[in-house]
Length: 330
Image (cartoon, rainbow, N blue to C red; front, top):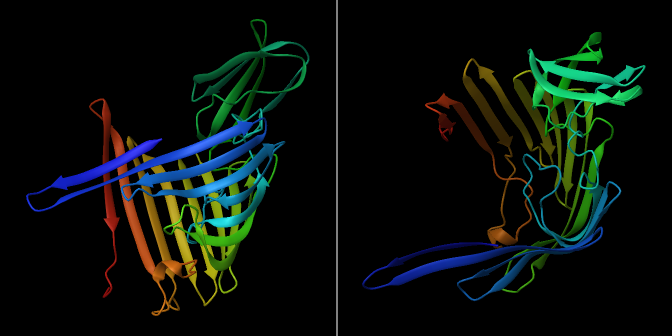
């Protein structure tokens, strides 16, 4: 639960606002009842999400008033709640969750051996493995892409020394499967009632992501109503001390978009740059209808750019950020 309040006291007017938010989860074995709700100063209790969910054997399914916290977040499409069903991959029931975003490292030994793993001459793992083909536990390895040196000892004797390229990133899907999701239903919006109200339009969302190499992946996302369709493709690459994500979008009415997100280190300084551009010249709203009730998957044309830098400073962190907003008459 969380709460937010704000107010002002004046001689002629007193104004105050408050909201109480709640995220509720009731579970029994693999089954859950999920509710996101709030209570505000107008004495209204309203529910944003209220659905039943089952999460087992790597598969998640649910039905009801769904929220929009999906596994893959669209770069351009609006988030929209629906009354419907969802089905897709789940990482919650995997026992190797610490390793799913890592490149697997397998070694073979003829007997029980002691193993050490180094990154830049720093020991990041030490343990013992049994004979045969064994996979090293990489759950404690640092994030990023880098070379590791694996040393296998038979007692005090160095028996093998192996060099491997290793990648670990929360943005990379598991190396052993393709993750996906499917969600569809009738679009809803908040009103004066407790539960969201239908706006008379259907929405279908699908997505899938998989690795291309050990340190790169491709993600495809699509959203569609009866009038609009949007398809996005994202390529992500994790390098040594750097990463980059490139997204392209195509939509109905000749809409298109491009996004670039990258981060890298230059000495002690960590830099990140983000650039997003949407071309949607056919964007229009019905002047006779309320804007909130209209179905628009995309906004009108816009461009966003930002650059940030951070570094360690006097035992803390010094951060600077620059937002570049183009003008209409550029």
